[in-house]
Length: 242
Image (cartoon, rainbow, N blue to C red; front, side, top):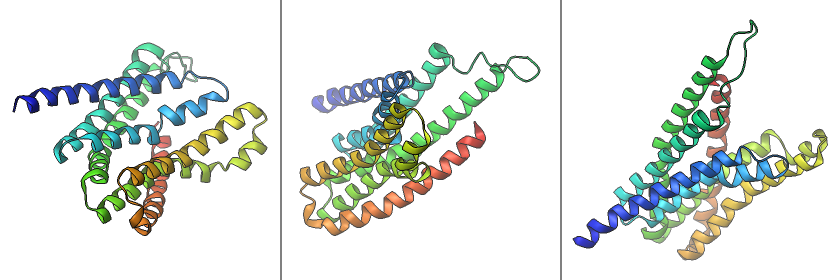
């Protein structure tokens, strides 16, 4: 009993520290210019990066409740840290002016509040699912574990595929005159598409899930399609709200 009591605060501390680091890295990535900017955003400030962190938190959890709460706490805390840094440090919501010359800070704060609320709601919804998927890849029976790994890969891949469909790499290279920036966006898209497959390969190898490869592939394909559609709807809504 003593070990359990001691270990739970330690696990919570690890989750909180990881969330703070994730939020700070995402904030820092916004300030990276040039070709490295899009790549940094893909690595530390994307659905792929944050979803992978939540997945790992769930995989390391000792039980279902800890998997759900740990993954959710990580995403919520990282979101709060990220937007708090924007509010207090970069203050990129301020300084604008309206057509009549008056300050646009009120609109900037409104947009910041709306986006914070949206991502908190997404964190509360996605956290439990990613946490349970992560734990299932480690503890469930082979078919369920393979299904969970494929679904996790699909969820992590959706944003990358949606971005690639909206702005295909070959069109980016043709339209954008700055070759360095174009290469950065293309590299970011490759990272967003390829890295979830690396995560899938690791999960399958660590859990010996290759024996259920048809389930892995079908779950990955189906969930990737669903995730890409959801990211498209989310971006459309965000454009209207922002």
